[in-house]
Amino acid sequence: MVYLHCLKKGEKQKMFEQILQEIKRFDRIVIHRHKSPDGDALGSQIGLKNIIKDNFPEKEVYAVGDDAKRYALMDGSTMDEIADETYQGALAIVLDCGASSLISDERYKLAAKTARIDHHIYCEKITDVEVVETAFESCCGQITELALEGGLKLTPASATALYTGMVTDSGRFRYDSTTADTFRLASALMKAGVDLNAVYTKLYEDDFFFVRLRAQFTLKIQFTDYRVAYIYTTKEELPSYGVDTFTISRGMVGTMADLRGVDIWVNFTETEENVLVEIRSSKYNINPVATKYGGGGHAKASGAAVKDRNEAMALLDDLNAYNKEESQ
Image 1 (cartoon, one colour):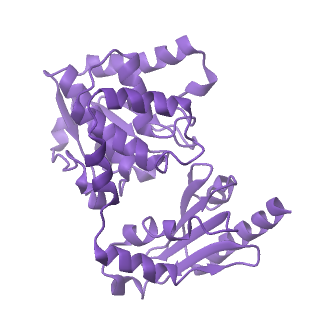
Image 2 (image 1 turned 60 degrees about the vertical axis):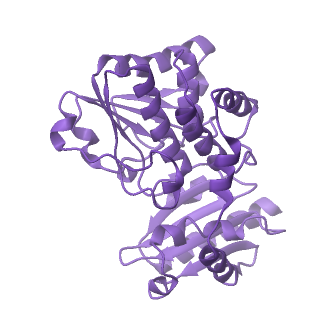
């Protein structure tokens, strides 16, 4: 496993070369990413698939995983359906996934060789070849860097997918993971032919149904003694909203962002199996709290799944105590 941010420029190039060598060596490649994909997971997957097909047209390249849901707006988001035999003698590449339990389609283990490119905080070794770099704002940024370092052609299709993932995972270039390198890579993608109007129109357009849904969740916001904002949705409430669990869990956490005086916010969503937890902060590293409860992610955006409401409230108490300590 390689932490790229610990390496010098030449060594960094060498590690991207290791991934490129595997791509060049195998005639069949299957690309995976995490379950319930966001824009970065799909963008990096679609982008890499297009890059490989555009530069090595003789290769078979597949993208697999669960349904794209709200990111079905991205061209190429329909996943390939392949048989188990496809993995024989193939390379499987896992993108944007910090934990093996989160990978969509476990059949990557059937491949002759496995590789991973990821920007999450390291939790475990997953594949044979691993390139992990937490300094990137997105996995799409990593794929763009790989293409540039490898001298690979970027087409409008691959560039648009990568740019969309870069925009969404950087919070429209607002998060502090955004660096000068982010804009360098975004510039390269724009030069390759990104249609900015098309990207942002798709990202910002909304159905009135979802506008109303966010309004309902805004009214559910509560606060702890030390201004941790939170929403708790019970499993009995879920069917009344008419959307899938992911839309409630990941999609509604943003309703608490940008509240004055709120530096940490958390969304709890009960299911039949557990309670899904999405934690965000504009200021502090909340990842250790998520890790304590078996989760992970980024310093300021992490998630977990806890067994019941009691454990969820214990996690909330930890966030409240942490916020108290940091704000004094």
